[in-house]
Amino acid sequence: MAYDEALADRIRSYFQTRCDADERKMFGGLCFMVEDHMCCGIVADALMARVGPERYEACLEQPGAREMDFTGRPMKGMVYVETDAIREDESLARWIDICREFVGSLPSKKKRLQ
Image (cartoon, rainbow, N blue to C red; front, top):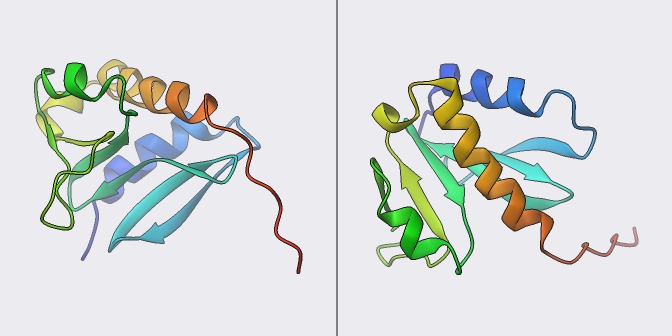
């Protein structure tokens, strides 16, 4: 499955000054990681936003947001945001800020021994 390269570039520019962020191809799309935690991503042309369980219901009430049902079941704490709702850079940044806030609340991942 292809993903929206223009959206990927917009998200990359958001994270460009962070040394703790990287990207990985996952789910047939692209995922942006912060401190080894999945933060947000792109599936087809939708933003995949990891908002956390506490903000999940409130985020679903936002324009363009819908349940992330990648596996056929809604994934609590994850939403898709449609293109029209993130057309403006400020809107996209607001969604990514929500994702970063949630990911920032998670405990650090332990480094794997190799």
